[in-house]
Length: 420
Image (cartoon, rainbow, N blue to C red; front, side):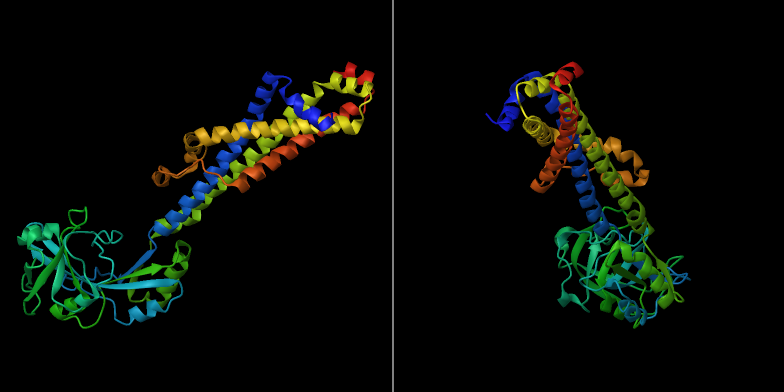
């Protein structure tokens, strides 16, 4: 019988010892898999949040709300701003809007918004909330450009007496002669719009808007050139700061540039910090696994000095003894790895999520914690990861066992048996 085979058979010589050793090795193995899973989940979540957080910069005329009929707030951006902004690097989309106010009672006034048919339907005062849900009729199509059509919010529709079943046939008259303390009259003819859709936004004020094609808006309000608001979408959160500075240089003399500071803050602080914390946690888990495996196997060998002395007394070579204990160490490590892997597969999702909440959650800024409440920590792991973890554990086991065997084999058989 070879010494390697003897070492593998020794695994079953003491089942309690095998179980205890497997658990001692399996726990740090599980922790390392858990930290790797947390790191992967955080990276995925960070990628999602980086793409979903607001990467839109808003421009409007300096010191003005940009509503074309609002008293003292009717200055708008020059038309040439549009082309200047489009030429800036990292800008992927530019959407011009024209806005006007119309008095109603209640709730005092509603908003008319002119936009390109394919543009995001932004809610005034909630510019980050786009494309509210169409609940009746249809959305704009490219064919609606310049046509006398509109999509009305359900709150505005209620005031106008337009019901969902009327959409497609109902009309709304835009009368610019009507005034309000903050709205001045415009000497323009009335215009009748056919309402082709009704939307719901989830905001009371957000439902008080009328969207219409921007060319139709220009025709109704007599605004041949100019832009109320310009929304500039940047290719990534990381480019926001550079684009913002470029915008201030290019058009800042006539515009207020409103950048989404929260998005830049997220990328520069929270996302980076959370990923770094997960990487540190993973490194600590690797160190813990190496230390535990090394010393568990080292103690296993030292406790069996008498056995080593006996083997030497009956003629076993130092190489053969080393082979036996290394084979046993590798076998114990693989059994422990299976225990850790099984624990991770069956309880990893629940326990890993809890580890994240306890270990990393407290380091998150309070206003970003809700972003990670639904962190998708799963129990799926790649074969490459398992192989790398097992390799690391086996190397630690070999080093621990080899060191103990090396110390014991330096002694004579009698000394080895007395040493225990």
